[in-house]
Length: 413
Image 1 (cartoon, helix red, strand yellow):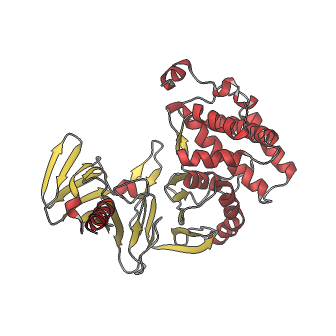
Image 2 (cartoon, rainbow, N blue to C red):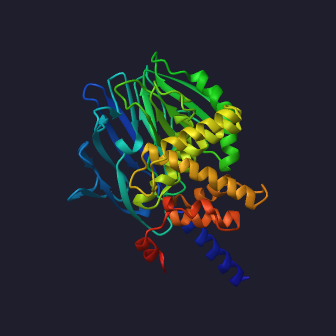
Image 3 (tube, helix red, strand yellow):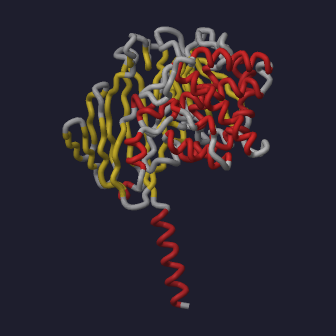
């Protein structure tokens, strides 16, 4: 009996240690006069699981203060909180411009559009072994304002649950919109879809919901799963006139059509980034993430009846003409021409896989395997594709995706 009790006690202790957690509350309030936000990180229950937090505060941050001890070392700030918790506080400039003068984040006064990783600092955290955070987010806004984030809310409807299974330290990221804004929400394919933009700026929310009602189920079939929530935000000039994806969210300029005249879709392209989270492992693997997103931007429209077979072939012919001068996909950034050429390569890979497996498998099987890897090299992509096909693929025996000799040497062992 005593041995049994010791064994049970040991097991319970092990489970308790494994389940150790510490509570975080991220807060943000807004100052329209200075176009800045005031941020706070509060430590709650489980403070004893934390040792130190090593933050990076870029130039947009100022007035960094904290309970406990703060040490500044170069561009890093080390915070040792008091034994009973405490808080870290800062001011951050929301607005951020791109090289062409357009805005990546914007705060004209009555609304603010930004990404969480713009206003909540990145940190390297030392904890006891196995400790995980339980984080929530509270945005303090005037009564007349509205808001949305990529996260689901607690029962109170105002506190957001921040949970990233890939991280031990949960930090709010993704697009967020606050102020005089309008929002429509709907459950599609088991996912909460939220569409938000400043009021009276012309966001076609119902058009977008109709479009997503027939394309999102097809995306779920292709990728195997969708996030619990996806936030899509739009805004007018001077925001950047394009689309930008982020975790569980994306931004699309109000003037961008859901389907372009060339029959590709920026919305489906960015949604593919949001859902698959696939990206290149090396500097010259960018073609894979961009090519895959554009491939599905065309493919899903075709699958769901958004274009005829003839229009689909016309689109592929147009992409072939656009990318015909591209000799290699292995560039640091995938240009529009490189991405077009990549789409044709993936179409060829899909056709070969279907033929090799008598239609039992296709490129979706490759995509789902890539999603488990997240960061993928061209070499790994080729290996995974040929494993799905069960044989070598002619489409991938091409100078366009040739592995450089130094990369082959580095990958050995």
